Image 1 (cartoon, helix red, strand yellow):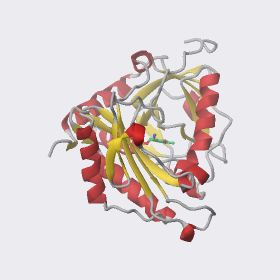
Image 2 (cartoon, rainbow, N blue to C red):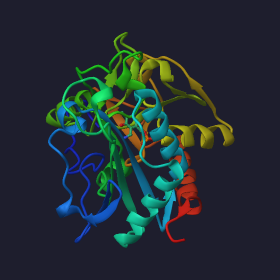
Image 3 (cartoon, rainbow, N blue to C red):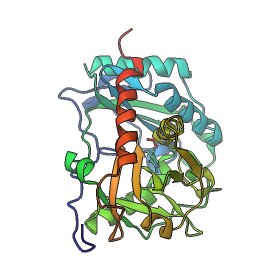
Image 4 (tube, helix red, strand yellow):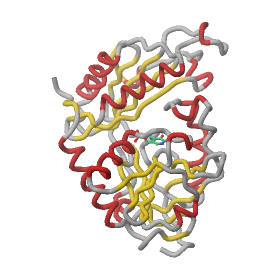
Length: 313
Ligand code: PMP
């Protein structure tokens, strides 16, 4: 595309805005009930301070994709932030599947949210009983045209926080104020996604996705120390690429590396793998999804079809 054309932003990339089934049911603090009746305290630390963690998980064709990896990341986040989980990982694994069964969903996006609990004031020792909410929903993705044609991406003015700030490496709710502002900036400028740099000016990630850059037969992606969330789709992509004969290198890169790449794509649970056709008005490669990206996407879909934890017992 030409540098001046813009792309209609996605109507509802569901990452934080999923649509719900007709009579949705969710798990909240030990009980399964109607979403409409679910109530949280106004002194919940998640509400007061954004003090919580979450996961967005997907189910494909009756199987939960990378469930254990998501729960490992959730419990690791809780450990780092000293949030006491009221149920075990094994119990959480059962409840996620039960919530999907209760909604009759086989293809879904499941939002697991945990907050520190209730209480006013900052000191965690005054905060009681973590809140656990598990809400499955139907998925609404980027429009298919964006997968076919590739996304237009712009670099946004909001930077990811320093990698040593608490909210960066854990999937914390507090982190997302930056990402919400970044996403809003990208969409207001007519782009499908926003690319965020870190404080040093290196490329970090998109607002809800990791980034991969292909130059020749080298595939580059920023390292965790760039201040990225270590995406589960990123991990799967690295595995698919490495086992398909490509060399994936975790390396700091600047916008120069992105603008001059042969191919660029983003990865995330909700977006899966999505090609990028332009960044800041620079056409990437041939301005359409490239051959290596397409090959990796095919292999990714083959895995989501065949792997996963069955929803049914
Ligand atoms: N980076 C950010 C900031 C994210 O919010 C996400 C998840 N939406 C990702 C990367 C991708 O992570 P995953 O593949 O685990 O969904």
